[in-house]
Each structure stands twice: as structure tokens, then as C-alpha cells.
Image 1 (spheres, rainbow, N blue to C red):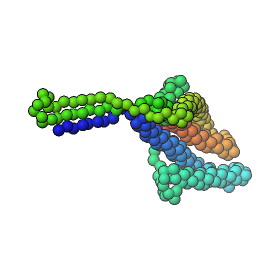
Image 2: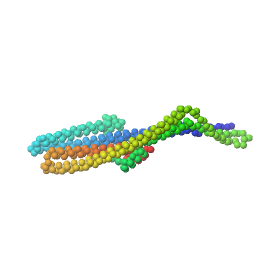
Image 3: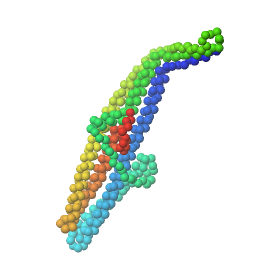
Length: 338
């Protein structure tokens, strides 16, 4: 009584196809991660824009109330014969300007919230309340360090690496067309014949099969695979250079936004000091209503300027983090993608 077992032990094309399939799955996961980062960056920018408009509306409401109070004071002084009527009218113009600015900002805020809801996959007609926004921490280090981290982490380069690996597997697959397919076989024999000294034993061996050489088809497949690998390498190098330029651009934009924020803070400090001094002199009758209106206008502009500078800075930080392959708002993300 005999049982035979024969099995194939090596087929290179099967292994190469499996490796290509695995790389394809990795690319799909990396594309998903990169898409998530891009959506997160878009939502982050829109969210901070909505916040800046919301804070601007709050500031404008305060400014409108202050302008109305100033107009009332000037009207009282006109009735007492202390000022010309045109000075009170000038304050009325400021009141109307602040009212128009407030209405315009409220409309912009409603539209910005609609865009944010659409980005979130929600109805633009829904109501949404904006909470406090945390401060996004900017990546630290020189621009060379930032570029190095981007090369390590960014999903686009990881995708390019997998694409190169797939093209290399294609070359190996093309080469395997020239190689024999090897098969191992083993035979396990068991007998009940008492005349045979050993009742159980194994025999094994190796056999091979060479595929028919298909001339131009095999050679052309090999040459095409080599060209595909070369193109994948070039694409990867091009993406690396593009990524380096994007990180450098984001880094410079963030530096500009930081300088603008510092300037806006200093400008607001000067405007507040000037406004306090002017109010003190106004109560003593040492300045005119026109001067008060001028100082009030400068303070209003300084307050709006600091809001926009803070918004631009936070968006700049998010853009730099995304260019480095980091989550735009995740301050603890140190995991490498590759």
C-alpha cells in the first residue's frame, strides 16, 4: 500500500505578484491618510477664518457702541453751542460706517460657516456654534531639519517609494519569464509486506519546467519594466524636490506671518496708549472731536489687524505641518508614515 505526495515549492512569479499586491494595499492606505490630511487642512483654515470673522463681529459691535456713545456726547455739545454741527455729523458718519462693517462681517461669517459645513459634509443651512480654538504648535528647528522630517514622514514620498518598489517587482517578474519553474516532490511509502525490511520510507526529488521562450514578447516586457522603474525613480526624485520647495515656501510664509503678528501686537499697544491719552485729554477739553474720531479709527484698525494676523499665523502653522506630512492640528503627532 503506497501514498504519493507531490507539491510545487518555488514559483517566482507568484511571489512577485504577491509583493506587488501588498505594495498596492500600502499605497491605498497612504492615499487615504494623505487625503485625510488635506481635508483636515482645508477644514482648519476655514474654521480659523470663521473664528476671525466671529471675533471681528464682536469687536465691531463694541466699536459701534463706542461710536454711538461718542456721537451722543458730540450732539449734546452741539446743543450747548460748544461744537459745530458738522463735527457731530462726522461722528454719525463713523457710526454708519461701523454699522455697515458689522453687517458685512456678519454676512461673511454666515457664508464662511456655510463653507465650513459643506467641508464637513453637513447641510450649509444648519446652525453651528464655534468653540474656542487651541493654539497650533509650530514645528521647531532649522529649515534643513524641517525638510528632513518632511522627507521621512510625508505620505506622497511614501507612495512614491511603493510605486518604485512595484516597478522593481515588475522587472523581477519579467526576468522570471526566463527562469525555470522548480517543483519538489516527495513520496511516502507504507507497506504491509512482511518480506520488506523497512515498512515506511520517503523518497524525494526536484524537477523543473522551462517555459517556452516567446522572443519579442518576453524581451519587450523586460525592457518596458525597466523603463517603468526608471520613470518611477524620476517621479520620486521630482516629488522630493517639489516637497522640499513646499516646505521652504511654507516656512517662509510662516516667518512672514509671525513678523506680521508681532508688528500688529506692537501697533495695537501704541494705539491703545494713544487712545487712553486722547480720552484723558478729551475729558479736559484739550482735543477736538475730530482728533478723538481719528484716534478711535486707528484703534479699530489695530484691533482688526491683530485678529487677521493671528488668523494668518495659525493657518501658516497648519500649512507647514501639512507640508511636513504631519497632521495640521495634531500637536503630539510624531509617528513616521513610512
